[in-house]
Image 1 (cartoon, one colour):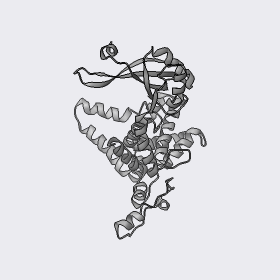
Image 2 (tube, helix red, strand yellow):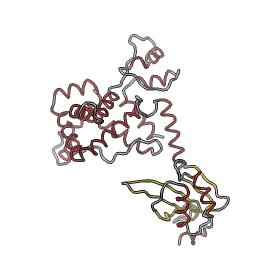
Image 3 (cartoon, one colour):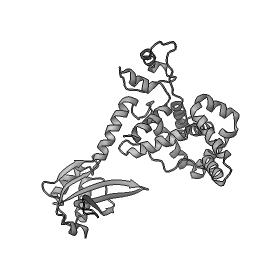
Image 4 (cartoon, rainbow, N blue to C red):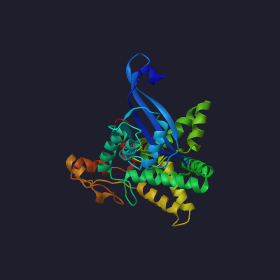
Length: 335
């Protein structure tokens, strides 16, 4: 009815192919220029349908042909990768006369914005990948460990190991000393949370303490730059639970067979979380201080792009990966 009321004759089509919970889905969104509730000019949209389809441009075009019901589509946009990417989809749609013969395509602007962040952050901090030593590889390894634990032992095991680790951190003096030595700021922040909640005399304090001790991170996805929220959510999760994640990895390493995949993931995660650097001592000027940070000063070595610019070297090497992840979070939330 809105389309008729707006007198719309030309339309744009947005498509997206995905998979959730093992189910394939192909979303088709029809957009047009119309009037809002206050009579203002605006862009409106309507989901034609969501059905299953494979990833080929030909079959996705046929699915659109069955759904679009004769609308004059003059522009399409969607993902730029995969078989159903807009550059592959458009020729099939034109052959089926499912869109205007002069229909144009536009690459996804959201992915374009993500690409700006991806390129700049990877240029400075390095890429994610097997064998790489970067903050983004740390995120990936953590999520792989979390998923593998869930797959092999189930949610209940993850709940138990998280709760046991939190309890040990609050009561075990040996663990406390190690946490204070390795991650003093993160550990103090965790202890401050304990103290603050324990000092509250009402039910909110008790509920908050129980939640802190028992509620593990859930519903995490692999960190993928093309879906930027996965990077942000995982970065936030890792920085907020840094200390307990470290000791969960310690517990898994000690409890699993040497050489197993869980053991390898735990070792890789611990190694990445221990990565840090210090400057050469007795430098006189700020420039000399920044210059003294270099790859050779790291305990196990960073995997970084080469650059002669001092500030970038300082940004990448003067702190551990937790600080770099906090920096990523700050940059992206203000982007």
